[in-house]
Image 1 (cartoon, helix red, strand yellow):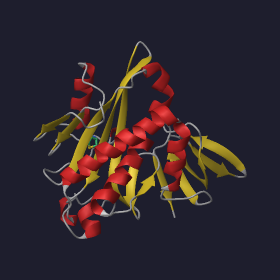
Image 2 (tube, rainbow, N blue to C red):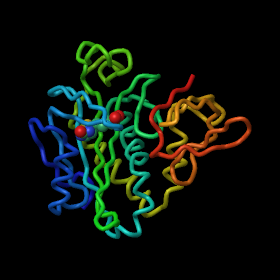
Image 3 (cartoon, helix red, strand yellow):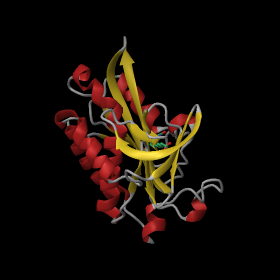
Length: 253
Ligand code: BTN
């Protein structure tokens, strides 16, 4: 079933990811989407929350259940990158906004965050079964719709374009584009997704970046993405790999 063929809509949910995880556990098909008009406990990465006011953002989670989960297992960690590409296509197509990708989970306009991705996998007996990819896009928020602590760091399609953006049209494009990037990841391999992702990143090879992991802040030079989706960071002439699991924060000039 193409992604987004079955869309379950809710006025309000604690978190669309939680509902999609429940539906996935009870057997819902690949491509099922869960959309809510508001979230009361929207979740971000690293245990953060996702501000989800009524009627302003797009809050959607997709069930990703590959036909052959064992064969697809190696590609699953790259789902946030495929989802980032899809979200970038969708905001360009529906609002004309050219967002950049901030590895590994964010879309930004300049330095301000426009969208975030939370991908979660479910395994049984150590074997991957399905994943849920949650995407939150700030769509029709005005500056004062963000809490004070997010106001400097966040933006929305409305703030960038100066007009309201149709959330349904955005959702339709997102489903279409995620289906296409997912197929390219599963059928065409990881490389095509990684190269496309690199070409739309907020910083380019050779740029100085500051990466934060559990062991602290590491300044270095960005040297592109590795085959598994990790970031190659040059420090004192040596290239280190920062994995998708390790990253806590990232800044660039
Ligand atoms: C992040 O940038 O920290 C990721 C944010 C992900 C937010 C989306 S909104 C839809 C889905 N449901 C959730 O609870 N979280 C994701």
